[in-house]
Length: 225
Image 1 (cartoon, rainbow, N blue to C red):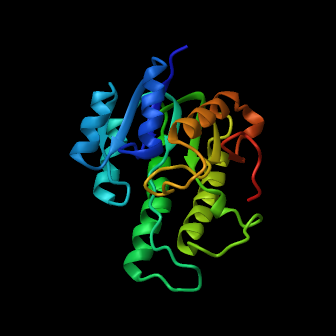
Image 2: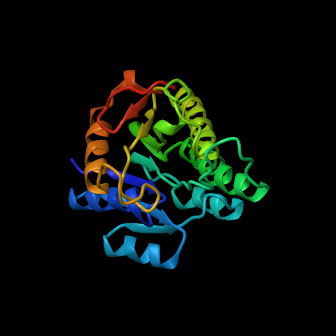
């Protein structure tokens, strides 16, 4: 059965791999990127490419009419940045804070508002935000990257709110993709993007209504908030 995907933040890494695997499966994909090069890569894979910078209000506002009545049944919100690699208790600058929080939190809130409009999602759609175990408060054992951690904890809160608003219409979950060999994860990471996305796609297909509002690892195991 063919799916209709929306992948937000797909110019590289996990987002691009989601597009690649969904297209290989014969699914229809709409995906976003900021740069012309990123848009060209998406079109080369056969995706409908939309220019979007979630951190910019004008760009984000233009997304709504472009996805109106699209009927997506699979949505992945992947846009995100790491920011300064502080060990903790080193204050970020105003610009660093704004860049991370605008992209990782405000950007997701803007897109979720568009997704909540009638006709954008099919009933029973699966909506996934790419979070991180680093955002878990219950499992936290390190303060490294504390701005990134704060942004992902806030994103988890946003996801929980969205799951309440969309309950009965969509299953909404936050997922940890694992430590992945991307530009953000680095070359020493455990997983390839191919493996992480394959795992996540299996998790997405197994989601049921009881999973709405949960925080899951890439293998489907629950993570503490």
